[in-house]
Amino acid sequence: MVDEIICSSPPKYRFPEAGLRIMITNKFPPRTRLRMASRLIINERQRLLQSANGMSSMTLDGKQELLENGLLHGDKDEYQEDNDATTYLVPFSIPSGCVNQFKWAFSWPLICTLYFTIPNCSKPRWENFFMLTFILSTVWIAIFSYIMVWMVTVIGYTLGIPDVIMGITFLAAGTSVPDCMASLIVARQGLGDMAVSNTIGSNVFDILVGLGVPWGLQTMVIHYGSTVKINSKGLLYSVILLLGSVALTVIGVHVNNWKLDRKLGYYVLFLYAIFLCFSILIEYNVFTFVNLPMCRDDF
Image (cartoon, rainbow, N blue to C red; front, side, top):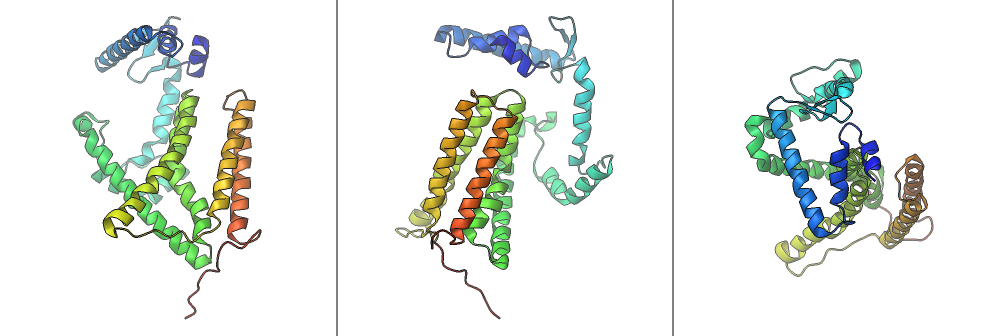
């Protein structure tokens, strides 16, 4: 198990650190887990203090480790390239390369607005304002979500596409991009359990909180005792398809020996394509009549 952790992220973990991470799992007694977790926190704090002082440490194989970014000398160039690739996010620094310059120019108004309204708590002068950064980021997410829903509604009405189809395609994809990026980041770090649990937890949060809070405010605060009517009769079929896709996903992960690889990725993408096709056909009354035709303004 130690070898698996080291191989999953070789520049990050050494053998002692991987051993400590193994000993805080539920395979050991609670007292051992608590002691090893405390030792791991102490070691991490010492590493951060040494990094702040510009010190470096030696790994077991004799290579010098760069403590300020957790990488070895061999990965320094790669880390620098990653930083260079993200310089277009700075509003006043024009990146190199035609593609990066196009992305920088296209997103410059948005980047500039966020740059001046959200403090960067990764900088020393703003590190104590992390809660303000979190709150302002949440506010901007709410604003962007409102604009996205408005645009999707107008586009769907203009093109004659039902709201349900716009919701399960464009709106669902737009709201799931942050979840996708978070799962991608932790999966690259070798934390497959966190990536999978993030996707499941985000969907449960969307259903129970994302629907429960606005419906609760509408029926208990804005108009007490009122009801929120769902026009789509095909929602039942979509829920059945969703439960079936979840069951097939779990079966696929089990058959794949609980490993996330390219083959499993193709499998779940294929399931999503099937779910999308059947949902769209149901909403367009291909199999059964579930929706009335959309009302058009003939002026």
